[in-house]
Structure formats: structure tokens, C-alpha cells
Amino acid sequence: MRTFLSTLVWAYWTIVFHFCLVLVTILFVITYPFDRYRKIPNRVLKLLAWLVIKPIPTWCVEIRGADYGKIHQPTIVVANHQSFLDIPLLYLLPWRMKWVTKKNLLRIPVLGWLTAMTGHIPIDRKSMQSFRAMDALVQPIQAGIPGMIFPEGTRTTDGSMRGFKKGAFVLAKKYNFQVLPVVLQGGYEAMPSGSWKFNFKKTFVISVLEPLDPAEFEDSNKLKDFAQQQIKDELKSMQKENDIKQ
Image (cartoon, rainbow, N blue to C red; front, side, top):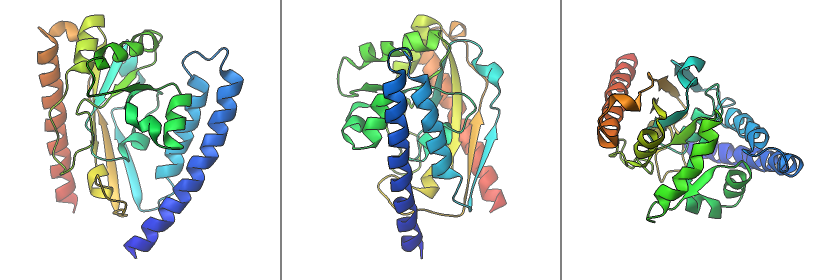
């Protein structure tokens, strides 16, 4: 039954992704001359996220601490990365963001085209130029669009959190952007990396912590370590809470 239902979900997602691709393409062409940061096409991805997550009746989403006041200053959002589902889950937050994505994502049909036309920023994690590429986040952040980075660099393969890379925190320290830690729980259990089958009985929790002022940290490494520990502690607490409920 799980295989059959997973197949149905993938078929449904294929239709939804192609439908949203058409909408994004139309909006991209119309707004290209004046929508510098692709804000309008990016609205479709919020619709896409809703269509990916919400119609699954046994998936529930709980969002904690998503207060607009937490992004009233130029902000880089950092989150742990458990699953492909983390992306649509984060799009359920009440604000839009400019994402840093893996460059090889652009090679994937439909998903790569959506990424390109909505103005997100691809980087090659293996290249020494990746830091320079991340500077493309500076102007959107200064214009009031939070940047979004998964500092682990890739999804977990075993459910545990990887060490954080320093790029987001170097950028935050350099430009005095506050760092907003976000904790995601449930994605790995619902759809682990490398699997196409779903766990259909799942509650996802998105916990938005308090923003961090980079001026309060001696350097970017200390900022990185503090943010990583905060996310790790909150994730551990959320997992214990989930175990009690089960």
C-alpha cells in the first residue's frame, strides 16, 4: 500500500510541478523588465509548496515562532536539512526568501528551470568561487528579502545533523546581517534522502528561534558554532517531544 500511495503522490506532484512551471514562465516573461529580484514569479513557489504538502491528509504542519518582527532587519535564515520536503516546508513560512541552492540543481528538468526563473542563487560547493557567488545575496537582503541557506550544505543521510559550513556566517559578519536559526523536524522520517517512498503519518514542526546579532560574536566561527548548537539543542528537544507523543 505504501508503494502504491507513494506512486500516486509522485504522479500528482509531476502534474503540480508542470502546472507551476507554466505559471512561473508566464510571470517571468511578463515581469522580467521590472521585477529585479523575481518576487512575483517566486510567489508561485509558495503556491507550489502548499500544493506539495497540504493535500496529503495525514501530513500535519506545526509552525512555531514565525513572527514578522524577527526579520525586520536584514536577515540570513539558516536551517538544518533533513529531506527534500524541507524546501516546501520552509515556503510555508509567512515571508518569501532568496535561496542559495546547489548549482547542479539547475541541471534537473522542471525543478532547475523553476529555480532559475525565480531568481535563486546557485553555487558550486566544491569551487573556491562559492563565497564570491554568495555575495549575490547581499543586495536582496539589503532590499528586505531574507536570504536562506542550509549551512550543512546537503541533506542528512542518517537523520543526524552535519557540521555547518561557514559561508552564511562569514556573510552575516561581513555585512552585519542578523542570523535567524530555523529548526525543521519530521522531514527525514517522512522522506529520507535516497528514498522515493513516504511515511504518510507524520507531523512536521518548523521552529523559528530568536535572531542572532553578529556584533555580539567575536568572529564568524563563534557565530556559526552558537547557531549550530542552538539548532541542535532545539532539534533534540523536538525529537524528545515527538517520542513522548508516540
